[in-house]
Length: 233
Image 1: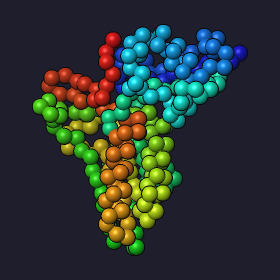
Image 2 (image 1 turned 30 degrees about the vertical axis):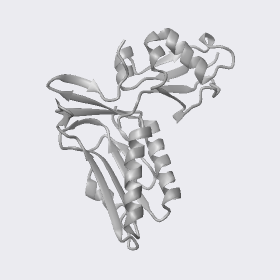
Image 3 (image 1 turned 180 degrees about the vertical axis):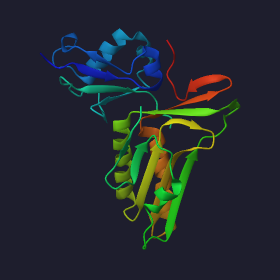
């Protein structure tokens, strides 16, 4: 008997469907199914997904997948809503890259990239602000696909290493419930000279917002809203 396929949901999809994961029996799929076959099956199960294909990315075993990628028994497919951007943490072996529920100590993260041959040390801190446009914000809730998030941060760091070989990088992102003024992300870069450190830091924070599966919900006096969220049923 073939192991079932696991489907994982996050953020607004998790709330909409009332679960963070569900199983698909192998017998319910075509022979030699692909990611696209699974998507079609899920649309039949959850028709509201039909209009959201352009905004949802599919990850197969924690890597973004093409629609024609083959699916095997026991695989995991995650539906990744547009990123904005549990308990525990993931840290790479250097300690410089992390996704964590702990409060971030910016200075200790910056210290991880200091070195004697670096004349430039640049850091960026992303903090929770008290408004978005004209809407008041009291709290942000960050949700993440923990296992995949660190992999994407590592990918970004490897890209930095190819673009700016002289740069040493650190990037820590927090998830969970954060109040106004708390630090959500810290990026630090060191380099013998200023331009690569500035360029790498900007590149990293932009790529984190684009590709790392982290979502945020804004909570304020007027209610709550997922940022970059999908349409409701």
